[in-house]
Length: 300
Image (cartoon, rainbow, N blue to C red; front, top):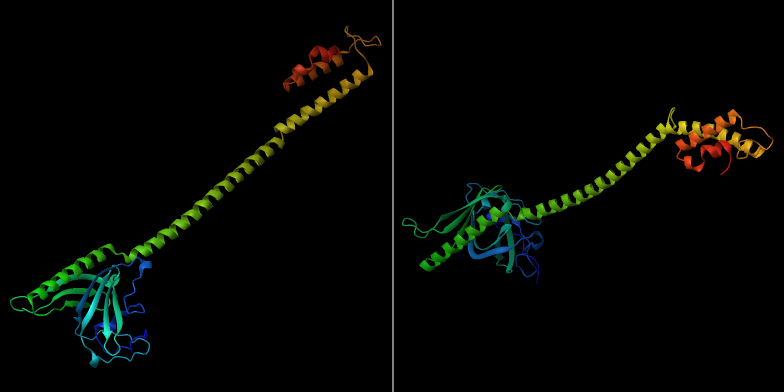
């Protein structure tokens, strides 16, 4: 059956840690989506509290509140899992053989250190790791073995391997990588949106500048004394001359001698109008269209 074990009745360091999720088969669930990796597993571990007072306990749903008189500062027979993100302790409920798991996030660990081990005065002292936490004070992981030399040697190796893994994990802070990755992705998305906005803003600004410049040129051209006004005045004068001269050409015919068909010579006024017409056409780049002789005397 995959039913959960009954609420934990024992009041000890383990019950003051955060519950950790397990798979339906009772194995530790690793949060691979957060980049968590399991590093080491060691059995027959004790978890101890160095605090002279009972640790604070928040009852889980359905779990009775704990009394200080129930406090026990040590849990034994645990399996310890070290990951890149957590220290997880697993115990087995003897009533139904189901596992419970509790963890310490490495983000809440201030420091770790090695201590203990057999000595002349304490030949059976266990090898330990001191874990100074930010929320529960100092906790001790004790590596238990039997009284044989080989067991003590293995406990020391287990403790040293765990210590090296803990120090490396605390140094790398892999649990922060996910948050940093999310932040980098968010910043990248914002940068892309900003870049697109800047690009659009630049185009709009350039278009506004072009519109402003075009308006300025137009305003200057149509202002008093502007190019358009001067051109229109000159064109008006030119049209008057052309109309007057065209009427003369329609009314009278000229010959090569400069005498009209009715025997009259070209007047000085007509000569002056023709000369002025030639100058205005020349100033407009049209001097080749009509020579002064053609304008004044006749066709070619």
